[in-house]
Length: 285
Image 1 (cartoon, rainbow, N blue to C red):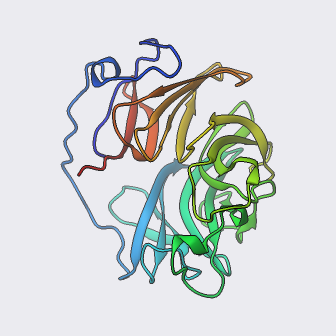
Image 2 (image 1 turned 180 degrees about the vertical axis):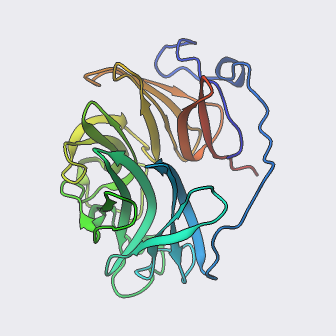
């Protein structure tokens, strides 16, 4: 995390308005990273992490791949568990044949711990370039556990073909998931073109998904979001340029989308200490 901000949703609330540092940061506390510990090392490329607390135990998930950052069927999702964040134990590992398991994210939902992963189809070997990849062939998978020790085999998520699934949240006995896709599932340039929309998918059981709303109508990307007590949504959407602040209320038909003053890669939004905290990766020249 490169910084944090306390969001004031009532500031300059007109859609499309550029949000400056002065209007977004409200009494921003300083962030000091005081302790960095290595918890896992297998000599492979280990990245794209998420962490959660379930039944009093911390869980850490990440992608591991001997072929590095690039898309490869040799990728796997690894889950570690710890009661004190100092001693960690590997409790689950899974992969999907001919697919790159990437960007695992947790969701505690209906007394189960789910981990969701988006998977590129990569065939029998690593992709040579992004032009070998087709977003329309993307699929979401999940593995879940009731106790954090025994996990299901990876399960294909119905309703996610052509969607790159990402962060999840729950509200009102339903699960919600970010999924980005080509607009109209257009058959054209491979990889991830600009003609991408970021959707909010909805599920009753965490496994079968349907479209509920649109986070970003164009240039959609990774979207982190949370709910207030009445179902209102605050979100941060990554884009190739600057990120967007997203806001909506049920039934999520009307959205406020405001351009921020910086790029935020891999965004996170959470409540902590009476504040709404945003974290992510800030790319600089």
